[in-house]
Every structure is written in structure tokens, then in C-alpha cells.
Length: 463
Image 1 (cartoon, one colour):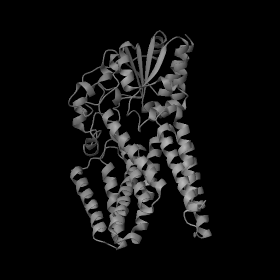
Image 2 (cartoon, one colour):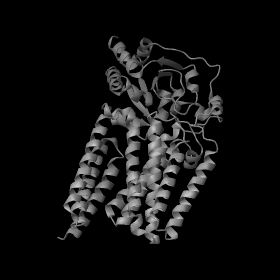
Image 3 (cartoon, one colour):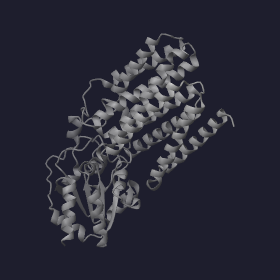
Image 4 (tube, rainbow, N blue to C red):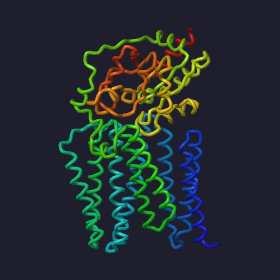
């Protein structure tokens, strides 16, 4: 069997593992194995490319290749092992950005090789522009999520500015492709323009839309990688890029539907910008709140028949998922039916709450999606909201002036009793007040989530 045929077989097998792994990622029970299968396929494809694609590679190149792979593997492994669940969105964002940056660099390196060849230059410029936007946009998303950058900077006429930069970047890339430009400096200028647009693209987008932005940037990276696969006639790179691009696009559309918003309004509407007008339009001014103690909460939950827990980013910040699982087990021992209500955009990235609870060995069957759990709130005795805010805000249904109006929410207000655990009365990630906190059936249980839930467990054990 010659090396070309063997490499084709390896690429075919790797492509199958990508598809199988992606399919397995759709279910929490099989997601881990799916990830491992896809990783094994990618490893085989990388090794096959290195050893079988070109037999004329000098030995020093092999040494440099494997040194780079070893360094990247160690850094990636240690980073992923040490990262906290609260920082997982940042990690996903920066890892995604690295993929886009690699695609952009590949295109820049290939610029002199294909300059003047229109069809190939279209591919080169596509990879360069899309990869650069993904890289710089992901870096800005990382800085926002990590708290290093103001989540809602005010940029006057940002839509006009962004549109001008986008048109200029695309126009310049088209000019390079069709005019047969061979000057490398022109490629560097196109790279700089695309990087600038990536920054300006993400910078004005408010915090509430960051999960959608991360997913969209992920699809950009896939498209950039696919352009590289087309350029190198590398089938597995092309397949992987297409899968990432299409999956990211579908996830982005699904999340927009979950928020009842169009992708256009996410990108150009500055939702979540937390403007004073928006906040004032949803403020529950004149409302009063009702406090509840840990002891009274324990009594309510102990004598309930059905309890629904709504996890949010505050649960992740407090690292309270393990003690929450202990509370769930304790209630079930006493005959209480317990489930978790998961909103599509809860947390800071798609599936954030699912991963968080899976880490503490919560039964996957207890994680209820919004459409499944909403009809059950009428028969729920107690809803315990831990760190969630915007996804339970009734203003999404009742206040046409609210920036989240029309967004599907968890309809917790229909339950008999609602207990909200928060550190303070500060607004959520969308920067707006929550009308739920002022409703007669709602009680506020202030404090750090981990401490509060730990005290709840202790109180229940003493009863």
C-alpha cells in the first residue's frame, strides 16, 4: 500500500470520527467519549500528514514540529486541568481564537505563493479575513468575560463605524484577489484591517449576548480552517472546518431562537448594553422585597413535594455545584422530587450549566430543558433560584420596553413559592432590574451560594 492511499484512508477514518464525535456531543452521557473519539481521529490525521504527505521534509523540520506539538500539548493540558468552571467560557473563547489566528497566519504565509492566481487568492483572503476576525474578536470576548475589559463600552455611531470598516476590509480583500496584487505588504494591511474589524465587531456587544458571540466566532474559525483545507487539498482539514463552521452556525441560530432574537439584532443591536434608558424601562421602582432565612427555607423545602432548582452563573462563581448535589440527594431521601431547570443561554456559554452540574455527578435525567420544565412550574411547590437572573425575569413577557422583551424565560413565577439566592440586589448580566424579586410569592435569600446551600444542608440534617 503506497503512502498516498494510506493517508487517504487515515483521512477518511478521521473524518468519520469527527462526525461520530460531534453526534455524541449532543448527549451529556456520551459527550466525553465523543470528544475522545474525535481527538483520536485528529491525532491520527496529524501524524499521517506529518509522515505520509511529504517524504522530502528535512529532519530538523520534524524536530521543530514535534517540539511545537509538545509545547502546545503541555500548555493546553495544564491550562484545561487548572481552569475553574467559572473561567470555562474564557478558556473556550481564547482556544477558539487561537484556531482563527492559526488560519490567518497560514493564509498570510501562502500569500506570496498564490499571489496573482485569482481563484486561489480568493481562498487565501477568505481564510485571512475570517481567521483574523475570529482571533481578535475572541480575544476581546475573553477580556470581557474575564473582567479585564468593560463589558458595555459606549461607542458612538458604532454601527456606522463597523459597517465602514467591514466594507473597506471586504473591498480591499476583493481588490487583492481580483487585481492580481503580489505585494506582501498589501496582505499585511488586509490582516490589520480584519483584526481591527474583529475588535470593533465584538467590543460594542453587551454581556447578555456573549454566549451567542462565542458560538458565532467558533463558526468563523471553522470556516477559516475549511479555507485552509481547500487551499492545501487536505480533506480532513476541510471536513473538520466545515463541521465546526456548520455546527457553530446551527448553535448560534438555536441560541438566537432561545432568546427570541435575530442574529442581525445580536450583532448590530447592542443588546445587553445596559443603557440607562433600558434599565429605567425595566426597573421595578417602588417595589419591596421579602427576606427569608435559611431555617425557613429548609422548612419549606423539607415539606415540599416538588422542588425545582434554577442554576445560574452565581452558582458557578461560588463553586456550589457539589453541595447543591448534596442538597438534592438529601431532599430526595425525604421523598421530595427534585429537578433542575436549564435555560438555553444560562451561564456564559452554551451548555455551561449542564457541564457545571455534570461535574458534580448530577443525574442527566434531572436536567430539564426550558420547554420541558415550564409546564411543570404550576405543580411545583418551591423553586430555588441560585445565581440566575435574566433568564427568570418576567419583564421578558410583560414589559414591551424591556431589552429582553420576547425572550423565552423559565416561568418560575407560576410556582407556589420562589426563593432567590443572590449576593445582592445588583442587576444581572443584561444590566436590567428583575421584576420577579418584588412579587409577593418571591423571597430573597441573600449570601454566597456555597455558604447558603451548605447551611441549608446542615439545617435539613438537623430536622
